Length: 194
Image 1 (cartoon, rainbow, N blue to C red):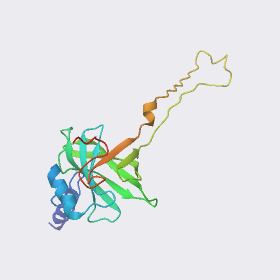
Image 2: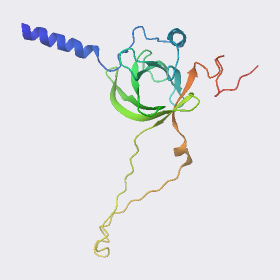
Image 3: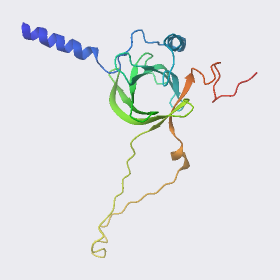
Image 4: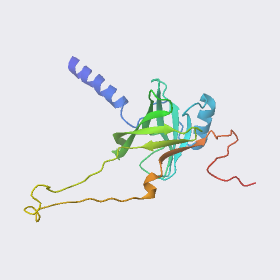
């Protein structure tokens, strides 16, 4: 009986720390609730509402209440129906260098929960309005034998592809949408009409 109680307690602990479970109590699940949360708890540094322009997702980044030097990335709105409002999809951890963070994001969804964590480098811009994200890049080059080239000519395998795409230099990342850079709700990314 004692062993069953121990197994039950351990399984309850494992269930409570499942990925995707929100780290904050009463996590906002819509834009107005997120704005109210940021206004109530203050926005400093990374705290705020951010968007991934190319992926159709808006997230809230807030300081972790339990772990110092860590921020939670929580879904507010998403075009991807697998990502529900209030879902924790990643964390940002401060580094020794000011403005540089370890961004840990889930890369897939399994059984309704985020899965497969991947790490990236996130750099906060000088104006605090964007997070530039760089992920691991792998280059593959397959080459054949260079010894006895005439003998191995028919078996030689060589594959080299060099592509220079200017879009590769376009940075990936997030941009802040709240609080606004000038405090009046405007955005540096969209023109204001009068």
